Image (cartoon, rainbow, N blue to C red; front, side):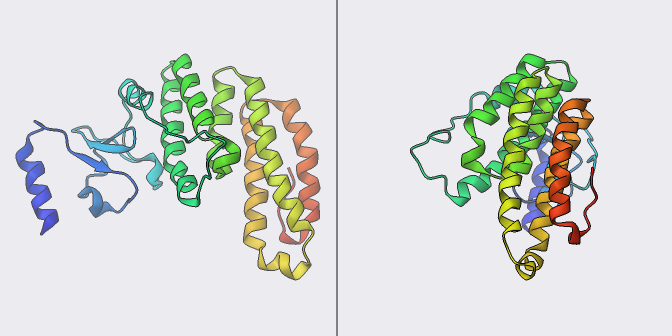
Length: 236
């Protein structure tokens, strides 16, 4: 009944007032089966009369982006104490960074695609400053910004970020290496996930033709594949 009422509102609205959907849930019915007609405006989706089929089944790729509009919205966000060293970043706060980082990386990529390099740099800086790596975790969601640094010509910053991310995975794998074989087996999914996320950082280096940096990291990466060879991961 509620969905029929919403469909009637859309039918009668005639685009006179904007209709928004909050992010967070990704069921077809949550968007009235109109997921191909969305525009990401910061942290919510606006219903628009423009068809934008999803590039993949991933809910993180829903909707088109008006880069200027979203940029102006994002740059006005109030981040509170998010970057503070004086507060405890609780699990829910850290978990919320998933959507923030994903949406900012989508905006970053759109700005780069449109040649708006300075604005893309601002978005990367915003993401890295307001959601510090050591405070928020979820390292795989920081990876796109390393690629972004390469694409905006800031290779030194890409190296710095990639080194920090590599170190995070090395620390976790070093811990797993101290465990007994049976304990490692119990944690096989976690170990394999960390190895593959570590590998994905090397792939960022490769994709951006940073060959020397890749070759340097490849040697260390392969030693970890050797340590956990019974899990059957391929070397680079």
